[in-house]
Length: 243
Ligand code: GLP
Image 1 (cartoon, rainbow, N blue to C red):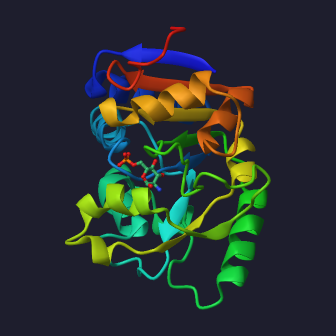
Image 2 (image 1 turned 30 degrees about the horizontal axis):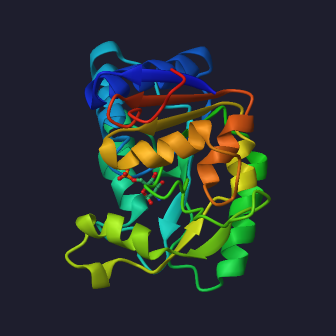
């Protein structure tokens, strides 16, 4: 794993934008695996800014997202579909038909997972962006998830519900289940870019980089990916001994 430690979150966003833009400039019809959460917001802001200033063209890219809450329609402002449209796709001029995410309202979850598996198979990702949960989860693959998983529905851990409650009016409103891309599919991306900022991620980052590869800390599998880059700030890198 290549590790880049930056001074702060703004520098993380700037370095991450350079990498994402390089992928799109090299291949205008790239397939981008994208993530939600607060961590990638600075990166998304920078991508939109560069698109507006320098005209970097996203009209031919295709995007696939990692995960979506079960039970939230795409027009709910807490859904990840809504988050992506408002924080990135509209700003980059990416047509909805070129963007993909699990349908949180699917009435047949098994069929929805099979649909997403087929989609991922048909759209090999040039890069997969990731954040990391404070318990080491990636996408919504919680600790204990097998490294062989494909798209599935998960019961969110109490710690994840608590972490994500800040986006909702109350804890009770946070969905208890989500659809998520599986571990195997995350690892299938040609390149992985994982971002981490802030003190609250320091333990997870340490486990991911210097701990053993274990399903108890899902992100630790990234140690075995041939082209994975971690960009983190000094607070998130606090426990690392090897940088
Ligand atoms: C959610 C998402 C993850 C994300 C994580 C961390 O659980 N499913 O993809 O990485 O939150 O979010 P944040 O960046 O807000 O800390």
